[in-house]
Image 1 (cartoon, rainbow, N blue to C red):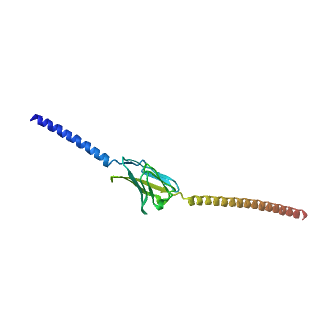
Image 2 (tube, rainbow, N blue to C red; image 1 turned 90 degrees about the horizontal axis):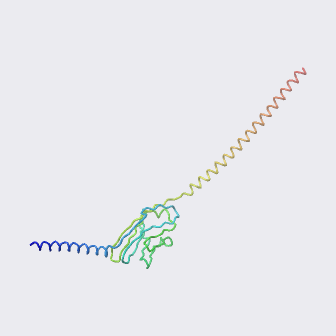
Image 3 (cartoon, rainbow, N blue to C red; image 1 turned 90 degrees about the vertical axis):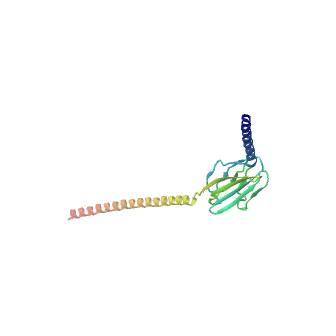
Length: 198
């Protein structure tokens, strides 16, 4: 009886090892797609070019699809197979560059480009893997900067006018005081002359 138990143990161990090897082989052939998103959050300003960077690895042929999800809805941006066709949607024509590693570059981003960018890597056997990048787009409000510049110029002009008015008033006061002093002197001389003549 003892030899049978040893064979049974070896058989069970061999079966477990075989099962693990088969599972590993199955995972490599079916789920052999991996995806890396090095920068999941991107901040940009209006009119900037941004790179939505990803890297995938797969033994087979894949198709890559990018979608934009925002409060305005979901839009398909581009779909392609590396080394093959590239299908860019009309709204992103002339604004998207694709790269073999699965990355895309958006040119001249606007406020409406803010949102979630979802990349789907699909292996030819049907295995999918997803990645998401959040893009925040800030608007530099040039009108505000323009307003500040115009307001500063206006304040400078007003202060220059006020300085000129104060200078003119000061000169007028001095001129008036000089005339008044001369008038007092004349009046005082006339009074002295009248007293002498009397």
